[in-house]
Amino acid sequence: MKLKLSRVEKDLSQEQLADLVGVTRQTIGMIESGNYNPTLKLCISICKVLDKTLNDIFWEE
Image: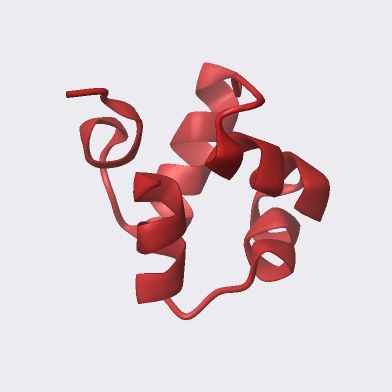
């Protein structure tokens, strides 16, 4: 859920975010729905694009 909120804050579609980090739109959708566990490398790429930290997006509280 935090990934989707961060993506929307940056006014990016799933497709746009996917293009920026080098994955498919389906991968972003699966990460957002909790059905895919991304690699650390992908998590870092997503955070850089969204100007967030790993804790901001991927840390479970």
